[in-house]
Length: 184
Image (cartoon, rainbow, N blue to C red):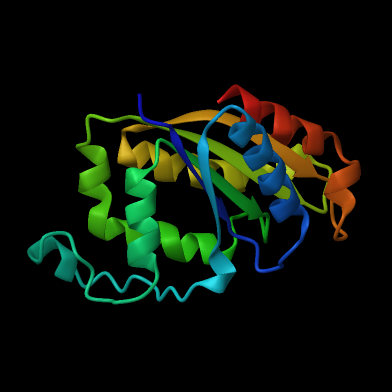
């Protein structure tokens, strides 16, 4: 039997921040269960925006841009489990994650038409403790996976009220990330 593959995408521009801490906890739990885990820190990659030129629609779903988005999207296609982690900025996902989501346009049909379903988990961090302020972010992520049709939302981890670097370590989401990682 093949090992399940989990791709964790940390979309915070801030390294070693609360989003990353929760991603590492999720990864630790999943690895203890024998899952093959890779964490990608989007801020370390060069990803240009989609310009809606539709080049991909006429060239075997390949984007004309030759940047890091292509390799990340391939890893997403190959993975069984996605963890999309983002801080909340102005009630939405970080710019880094939005760039990647938009670039999936080139290969969305490949994911949509796959017979292999994927599981998706969301890790949301915010300085605000109010879950109501996370609604736009969650709906943005849900809309993204809904379009893909073969990706199922499995859970949300709320790292809310964690603003300063290190706040997540003292937060209930720290243990929750680990436990959910163990359950995948």
